[in-house]
Image (tube, rainbow, N blue to C red):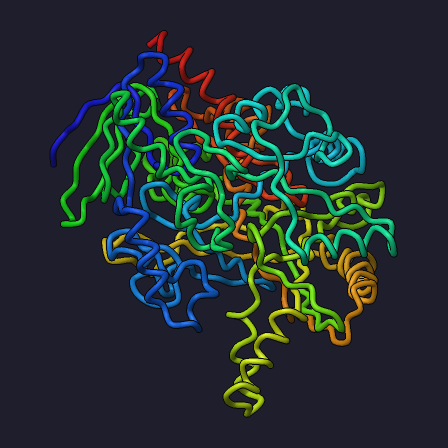
Length: 541
């Protein structure tokens, strides 16, 4: 077993890891980054997608085949059956163990939390409050928006929330015809405001050496031109600043010393050879599932429940945004598919005093081009030739998906543990027990579903179909939650582990509440806040 020293070790090269790495490098502090998966080119992913059969193109993970040593959830291959799921609802997630992480296949959506979202217990008597308020987080939101390159509206009436210290770096992208019509209809008939999505996508200009969006409508599973931010675009820049990045390095153990400080991490390469990496500061930024899994796997005599787990909260409070999809058939064409796949949303429905009784919900018009979704239904009609072409065109124009995405409360029983089933390296697979809970189910019954029916009727729907179960949004949150009390939380307000002063666990796992909007921007804001503390501590050790 080899030993490689480094002052600061970062496990994971997703957006949280690369943001913290760059802050350290800019402060003159050397960084070693370990990535479980391979490092690939954009051209390779695009070619993978191009070669997929039509039936597989709707699954964003299909063009990211996992490696045997670094499985991630996928329909086939090494990741098939990787997540061991139980409970009333399925915590079926989709993430990528590649250099650059899951921003490879995200939509780029970057909503902020609101002040109320961070004070659920104080305001509504449910959930938990954050360790700090919105005003404390706001400057870090601004840093995150400029680092990722966010486009968004200049008009405060269209911003979410309109509590900002800086304008967006770039203007909002225009709506496609379907979104424009949807926006007009819900406003005129229901009084609802469908506003532009703040998103990590270059609008009409280059930014951070990335080109402008050219409306491929392929943001999920991969932006073919790199206009959308993904963390892989930062890796070469980090290396130019002195970072050392080792891919195909699966960290399987965190080692403590007699003082219960973190002494080293151990990783397997693709040949099952183990290497020990010692250092002074350690940042575990795998993702919201792989981080708690690693902490639990690393249990030792000083930490029998796992690293950073004296509170028994590691792996608990797993959260996401449970969603229901409503597919509508329309009298008149809407033509989804022009521009980014997510470009707008109704956020005002996520707020209100009703949150003391049930969840808020966010409604979005899914702007995915419909042809790949409707072709197989058209084929079932028995039509051929020109008649089949016309039916595909009609369904493409006159169908749409409206997504109802809900917030969820933290629940200690929604828990990740270690399965007795092993992966190729002999490491335990993650097991997740999950139930969205009555807070969400009540919302669907008395709130979000009635609004969805109103929206469909306003759009002129002749048919409505709803997904039969809550699906996950792939926004993994909660497994290493933040708090001021070490007895009930895993990390403090800068994402430093209560149990180990030289260990940081930034990212979605630290999030205390979910609100309804996507989690990435909040994760990056937390990364900037943590980076300040890490830089200061690195200079002192």
